[in-house]
Length: 461
Length: 81
Ligand SMILES: Cc1cc2nc3c(=O)[nH]c(=O)nc-3n(C[C@H](O)[C@H](O)[C@H](O)COP(=O)(O)OP(=O)(O)OC[C@H]3O[C@@H](n4cnc5c(N)ncnc54)[C@H](O)[C@@H]3O)c2cc1C
Image (cartoon, rainbow over all chains, first blue to last red; front, side, top):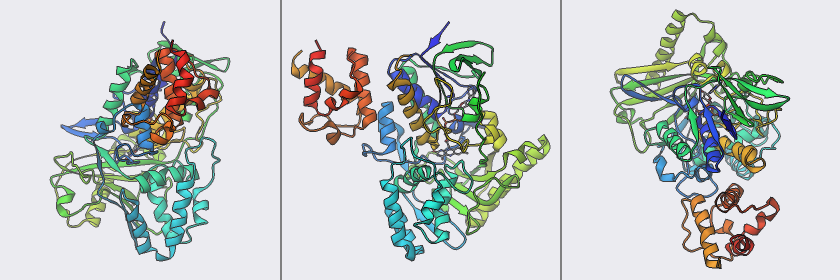
């Protein structure tokens, strides 16, 4: 029987990154992934000859080659993947679009500063103070106490309209909480979006996943796809191994789980303690057109759209909330990988409501989501007259089916396990529910949890 | 093993960790951290590479002795027989 130093559950960004670290230092490590394809919340698929990314709008945390102290540079160094291999292409610029105001930002923070000065001249000095607070804050310290970001930012930014606009992209790109976020998470997201910015690897998320897979297998790591974990077997309060969906048992004295905290605790054989399931889920509509938005002078890379002065980032009472949206134009990076025009539209959604639908109404409502997405694009860009060639819509149900996250909660629970501990000896959490989110965040989480719990003290189990 | 050989072994390790950096002009007396983009996570890697390649164990309290190339050579020299 095989005995592993560490078993990793889930081959998403965090599980793969953690696996590389452990294989690098000669641990016997195996990643178990239920799905046939790796990548998790940011995987890929193919339909009618078209390549689709599940999640990728943009990678946050843009950094230039060798730029010091940046999360992206750090993580590439830890994984020993050369910067060039990502072939990053930067965004043009992005925009926060509210009823009476818009704020553009790019990978040069100066644009954001000027835009705020232009739209909110009275907040100029306050925003400078906020910038200072953010840059001086030790956001990734695992011992930071949880505190409300809105409360803290409100002490500095006195115009509520600006506050709502600043929070909008940060919430929808990484908050498990409704209408607020933990201050550390706010700072992480602020830096990753406003100070570092967006880019896209050539050929999208496939490039990242392939690099991670290649590195992991080169180092001797083992990956088993189509291999779900049914239970995590705990004996006398400590991890003993896992039982797979097939009934096969695998022994290991240490487990790193990337499937989420409530999801992990629900498959623990004894001594489980549950965490709440997060409320935030989304629908995603991917539209393919016979023309590119850039041909009509639409140059934005991502638009954070909201119909009201207040941004309602919470589980809606309805299936989805089309009063706000993220609209992503994957063609609008410096290099364009695509032959066709593509627009992606994200709406906040209510997973419970989607769960109640029968098959027929489910399909009808997916069509309606597409229609609402098309209508929004037509309203914002009447000049964009193009034929829809193909589309795909996914819902909270799709997210749960393919990634196992309860309630399609993309950002996981609100009760993060920041230090990765679960209360069960040698069972640790990495990824979404450790608290570092997004592609870069999840990889950093995998790395830091592998370092902290599997390499630093115990080393070989 | 002479100092030059020990120095080279340490540089080889750093080269593998800091893949995007130029190591041709390192000053032996200046802190590695100040010349290269190395943080505490990367020093952990230096320690683990020493163990993986040469079975040399560096206890946590001795990490400060890895600050400069000179101090590395002094501290690690006797461990490379
Ligand atoms: C629509 C959408 C858009 C997004 N856009 C962006 C973006 O533009 N930029 C960005 O940075 N981030 C984006 N994200 C977020 C990003 O994808 C995630 O934060 C990140 O991928 C999380 O990685 P993870 O490793 O923590 O978790 P996951 O990717 O969820 O990994 C967990 C893995 O575990 C597997 N698993 C679950 N249960 C079991 C089991 N019992 N046994 C075995 N395996 C199991 C799952 O199949 C999955 O592969 C987006 C997400 C979505 C859904």
